[in-house]
Length: 160
Image (cartoon, rainbow, N blue to C red; front, side):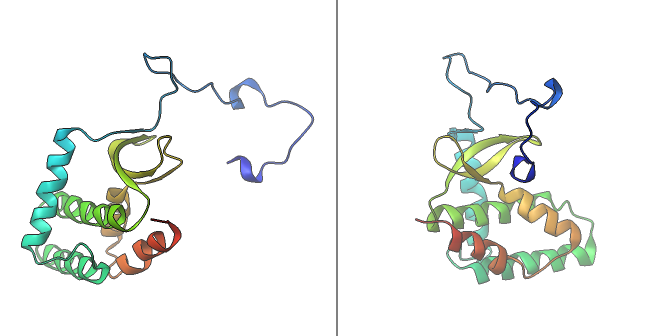
């Protein structure tokens, strides 16, 4: 991160110099975000419908939190089911909450870890959130009760 690097009078060595931005076949710079296709929209709808069937209110962070915590408790008592569907379902719920309450919009995003559903600010994706990363990292650590604080912070920091 260049934020903390001191300026010097000597240029960076070639291996530290930033490559020019990649361009797509139109000659425009590639962006880390692309519009959703029908396949991704169907994926979102499937998981949102599953959350509604569970009684989760997407508009309410406490409801999302209680739903995820209950799903984690149930899974952790058996640990014989694949948890990836649960993680993805709640990631979609968090992302949809952010898309409804902030200036962020759903997109297909690409970063150093690959391509995933995420939320971005503007066409150049100046700010990006990948909800599945938020949920998966905390799931692996067994964290509960984190949604209101973490997602609430994002909501407070982003304008609608």
